[in-house]
Length: 207
Length: 423
Image (cartoon, rainbow over all chains, first blue to last red):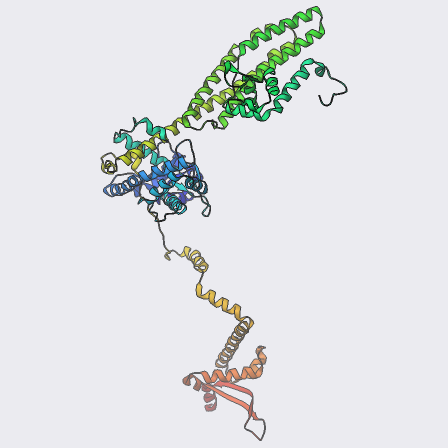
């Protein structure tokens, strides 16, 4: 158990462990026995190791939904929902700017320089970036695209959706936490019965 | 043709050799215009002279399909596609039935020639038969290679996800057709066809079987990968659609209120994420076994002022070092004098400073030593001073001044002195 101290600590700090952020720990957490041991330890803290639907990311969840826990969840949920549209718009922006086929996935690498050069080549992308950077989630005050991009990516990194392997090199890897976000989007769509399954085909063709 | 070989090999003496070479050279000569035509669909007539155009048409490289614009013949298109692994245009052609029919005919011609004892003819038929078999397996090989190539580039020759999915569906149909082709090959028939002829048996049965089973294994792998890739593409498509539609919805409904899931009786798993707590710990001194480690840590803490001091010693160089040395010597001297006084206390009679110095073998100069003893004596508190008796053994140096040089000091306990005096 001693050797799992650092992993436990990171989980307790609220980190999401996936193959991108910490491959070694991620593989360790595949072991059910270990997860049971960790859960045993975490029980008094009202926490347990949880993972998303496809098992691509691990994090801590509450065991009992006490008043206190619910308060925290409320707070967190509100801020996630607030950042939902900006996050989705950011994902679309990256996908389009880099000319990717599909949506961003965990493990995708984004080179800031590539992204920037694609964005500044296109007036509409510059416009969308500026709009996005001004959102209260990203709070960029600069009107220069390169600064806006830096700020946006830094914020998203802080939120845990991006991982920067080298501090001084400007490339990022999408983390497994994005999967969790997509699951949330799917959940909201289903649960709220949003009429978006039969969206107009023009919208689909746009992308 | 530019350099006629001195001796023509049998192949070169074949009239086909010259013609084929001429045609291949013709293609090479107009490579630019032909490639342009390959990529654009139409071949530009104006790129050729009238004569050259006619030659290309006669050589069956170009043609006018139904009075339309000039185009490459399908076979040339296919040749280029195959040479450049251009998956957009590469065709997978695996008509096994045709091949099998031809093989059958060739074997019969071969056997006929053998019966007649015509070795030249049977040799020729054997060569054609080998080519035919190689053609067939080669075609399978090409088709499978083409499938692999598509897979490995993840159908990069089409850009949109929808097109990729269509391409996978196409590849799956092609794969099925190849497998069907394998099914047509009936080895029992081939064994019968080969009869007792060892060479034929080898060609038609053992070699062919080895190649086919190799291809089957490869196809199986392709099939698996296609299914996986399809699942991935579908998932990506689904995801991109979800993101696009959700963001469009949220943009259109800026005041959309999401349910209060955290306070429902059943909290959905997807939002159950515990908030972070940072486990902190501090230095505790209540466990003896930790003291060493903690002391180590304390020592490892960089101390600013000391660093400054050190840098000062460094800048001041040896002056400081000498001062330090003197200070330590001074301390040692004072300590030795102290020991001397202790000895005095323990000793029943007064001691001579110079004698003590010699007895103990101390490294001090007598003058310095005596001075220190006197200084120590003078430095004693008044009360303690009375306990000691200090006699200076001095002599006047000269009659003309008052300079006295102390030769020795004798220190004793006053108590003893009194006692002895009383005694």
